Length: 184
Image (cartoon, rainbow, N blue to C red; front, side):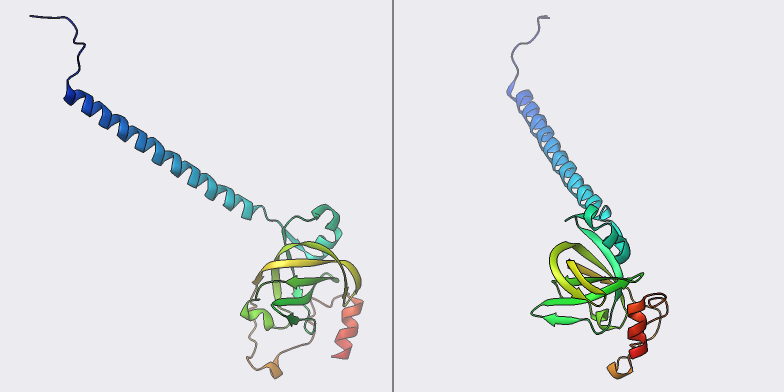
């Protein structure tokens, strides 16, 4: 009986080892792809979650700090300020007596036509001289995404019946809006 170690590997053992090695490489490669895909999804989710939210009055006060970073801007659309021009919708929004001019570069949602509709816009401040209902400004908000909040109040489909008067919660202490209210 020969008890010396075998130094020769037969062909069948070599074939099995090569198959196991090949499987391990495939498993490692698949795991690496899943980890990269999961990391990418997490980064995209965090990027959207870190897009912070400002009301018009806060965004105007913090304009210098915001710079050219993207953020979400919230306010109510002032009826009569909406102009559609070659795929760009220009309008004004108000919150706490502060007004911002908005240039929205995609099609607005269907509910956007309702007067005094609350909107959340994604975009950034852009330098440019504009006139708004509250006076002259040197910045406007360039938006590429709009979310419209529907209200729980019923509004008729007929335009002649739409309520154009300024809601009490908007015109509380805004002098320029009180003038508009008296005109309507």
